[in-house]
Image (tube, rainbow, N blue to C red; front, top):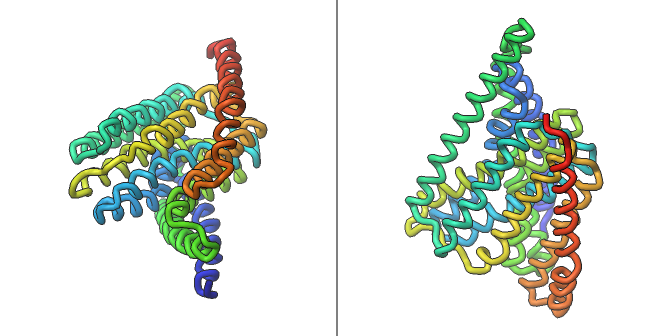
Length: 357
């Protein structure tokens, strides 16, 4: 382990924090200036910007014929986004969830997760599959931006106020967004490289590194942005960033990766039987938790974090063939998963009993 690696890791962390601050600041101002809600900015500009590392890693891996890395990076990042990022942001401060997110965008995330599983059942995501995913991304983005502008114009007309309220210089706000995205990409790259070097120095295998560090590392911009947004009170951006990133990862990142891969993307059977179902379960878990009074309290954030720790622990144990993995799996199947199912059922039941808006 050399000092340059340690320096790159520290500088990368600093760039992540500063880049997240710039991105949230610029995006929130642009939202007000353009008459678009902060939620939609979180679902589009912020989400796409913070997903740039996933895009770079997966497309590069697909072009190089490393399909496992391309698909695993997206699936692992989506799991990390929901369980770790939403969990940590909610643990810091209770998150308010917009009604549109529950009614429109979380169901979209669930549908595209189901679509990915359907495409992966034959063990391959071909170029036609990738093209269909990318076309769906264009349609989704156009839909939510138009819907937001209509809602903003209607609200402004009802209040007899302008639909847009520019604040500050547009070029300065745009510079904050672009500069923040650039720092997030560069910072996450340096941090991932440093983390991989640390892992190898500690004797961890490349399989474990790929399953955990690369997926979590490329999600560091989402983590930094959502935590910073939650701390600054931009809670719509904090939650919208995660949902938008997950949709973009499936439709945009895997779509482009499938198009770029010379022979398509191979999906391992273990991915179909474990990781993709976990990703789908995390997406489904958002619906009752997000809809429960449209607030994510701290205890639910801690619960999401514990789920992610449990999942990652299993990945490491299975990859290293740890002697305790059979007992761990037995405990998860007999106790943890049933308790989780009961908790989700109770939360869903309470949501159904809530009065409709």
